[in-house]
Length: 118
Length: 330
Image (cartoon, rainbow over all chains, first blue to last red; front, side, top):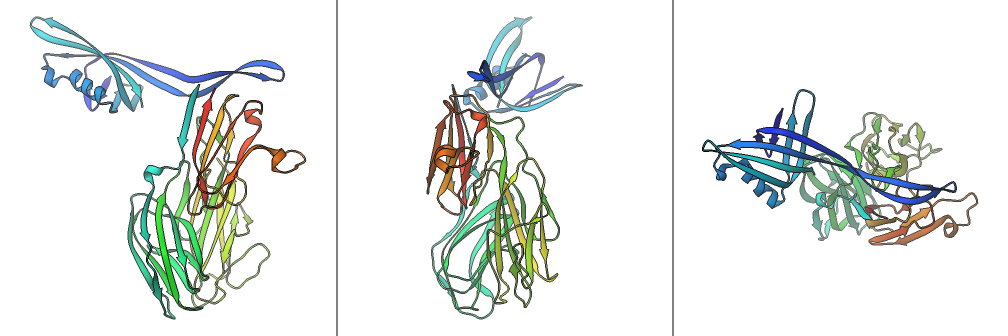
């Protein structure tokens, strides 16, 4: 599986996708019977992406680059390519957590991105 | 509770390209340029709108690039639309005396764009044109599309002869007729070239279903008659009769908002929510809410008792459009 975000190829360890039907509900009556009507407004796709980078200076870090992009509120391209499916869309970066470990003197950075489709 | 709105008239793509208030005159028995308004450059095929004031009765025709989009004789304010291909085109008003010398002023030309618009770009008519306004899938927050207004603008001439646009039953010299889906239509307006000045113009506006293919066929009595044609179809355009642009589908207690604006004309726009009943006693009993006016017209209605899917929106106003649709959903 090849994953890119904002044109950068990520060392992705896991990817989960959310698919939410955005809707509202309202009370109504139909032929004398109570109905709870549903109006579907659209679909919201989100992704959680766990990535790793190792021995990369912070100034050159993908994590830092995505933090800067997220703070600016700009949208970025997001692609996932595997044997059975291709995702290609634009996303907002809505959040990120970073776990840092010093393994044998080598800086290992694990970061988790929260993405939402534009 | 959520308010969803859509700007169906894409103002970001809209631009006034020419605004020339000057008066231009010409006195010549042969066709020639009364004024060249320069070039316009269109990055994509575009809906072009124009407006010009003709002060003297004479023969005039408006040319964009290689094709004519309008022709007239009487002094009046003329407006119109044409769907023009991408590229750089010269915009020229031509004149010949025929009935008098020429004088024009207050020329404006711009481009506009709508969601859900389809078109056949300005060209010489050669063969039957087929157009389909696609249905939205999935449906939108307001429901689905129902009927689109199609505007057919045609300019024609016959070398060294007169040209006449024919309605059903007419038998005119060098006739030009239009059939939609195989049935001849009555032109909404026509300017005949009875003086053989090589300049005839007509247009047709009508309502046709969304999601179906519609054919447009020009028939010419004289094979030498040349026809320049452009067609645009869009649910958000208005014409002289009521069009039903959408089928409503949202929850009870929601409020529907509609905003109407001038396009090439600022007519009285009519917006009606309801349905003609089995025996009609007029708008007051057929429609639960109406709005009417010139300029920018806002119309809203909250569906407290009236059931949303059982009624619809009906709108008219030749030369105007719907610009915004919104629903405040409860």
